[in-house]
Image 1 (tube, rainbow, N blue to C red):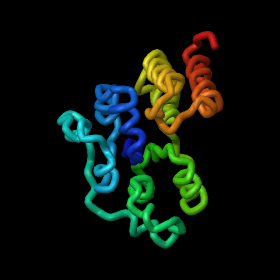
Image 2 (image 1 turned 90 degrees about the vertical axis):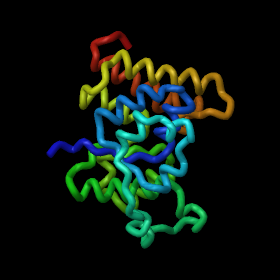
Image 3 (image 1 turned 90 degrees about the horizontal axis):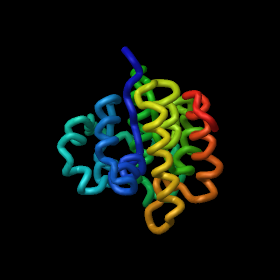
Length: 194
């Protein structure tokens, strides 16, 4: 069976539904990959996304509390125990054990560090939203270079505008360090000038 499952924190969904206003693209991703989420992540999703039937019908909802899996490793303030990132990590661990995990999408640096420290076997599957776009284009070929670059450019423009919306937690410094090299990599892969 192909590794086609994705576990993601809510920032990925929020980026497409609210920050970029591209629920259509999010629906396409959920048609291409099997996205799994639980009650904590669902609670963090915007109401307008939860009211999108095409999106909700594509999501695999998991009713198991995967926080219990990571609780022995949890050293953070107990108020963070309900953060969706940790549910996404638990779901990712479960899917990986089944040999089904393609991506664990986390944009939060603390959550990524938590994975690297306590679940290093998931590190190879862990990406941020930008890395997911890169891998969809360059590795899986599920989106074309033009579409990937267009989405990344939309993220860059949102960051440059500033304000409250910070897609993927991205700021101007991080987009020069992360986003620009990913765009260059996609351009090289597609044979476009860098």
